[in-house]
Length: 348
Image (cartoon, rainbow, N blue to C red; front, side, top):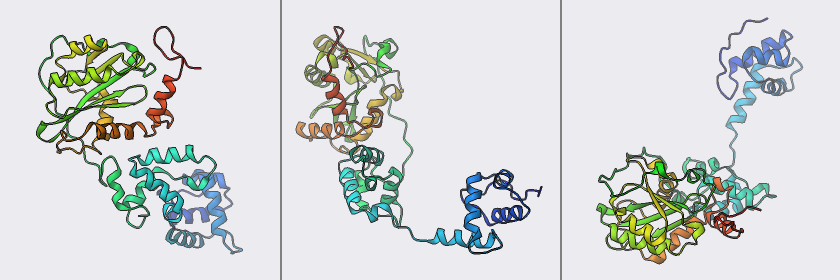
């Protein structure tokens, strides 16, 4: 057996040293599997390399021939898929403008064009077309349609923890166990997104099973009284199937939670301090909402109709955890099912 001088594989591509090893071991009568085992590569990689490196030479595999071919393949300019396909590019750009993420676009294209291979693209290709120099098939300004609105991610700061005790609040540890697995509808997570200098706010509610979003209009103050009024008005419009619990953080705006429960019969539970992951769906949604309501802006001037428009935008976004259905589609499907005596939708 020829002793190995290659060591660990050098990466995805074979190095010239590995090609020389293949040539020596092949000349010594080594088989594909034996060579692959000894240099630490997959047999298919070695087999493909031997075919390519033989070229037109009658002497068999030659490392120099194989390396030259590999260098030419690497240098060959490749046309980006989104640059070559105008129809696919237009479809991707249209969905980016609707604030769909690259992952949502890639998955939904497979659903919407199941028999059209030309309408397939990976989310990574979309990102590269937006950000990588030389791959810019998509308009650069469309980066503003992404959730971050920028090319590089910044580390998240620790969320501001609001202090102060709320009378008679019920901790999340006492919340029904059925809430956790998202198998039963009607359980919501809520919070406020805050505007410039904490002077304005918009209330957010997210249904845990479907991800359906409702927004609370708070044009003036956003204290306990205003939040109570908007919560009662909004929850009061929901069918009983969709009004079981709300989970909120310990913000003082929920000081009148008992009045909300009395008026709507919805139970309200409070997260532990500094535990935003206990409202994960709401935290994620609030991040999406910042595409429409940027941090540091005055939120008091937005009309209720615009809040409805933004909520509809989010409710029309396909979601991975819903098998790429939209929250609106999931909710409509849920409400179309028969209901058992306990208020739970029955699956067919």
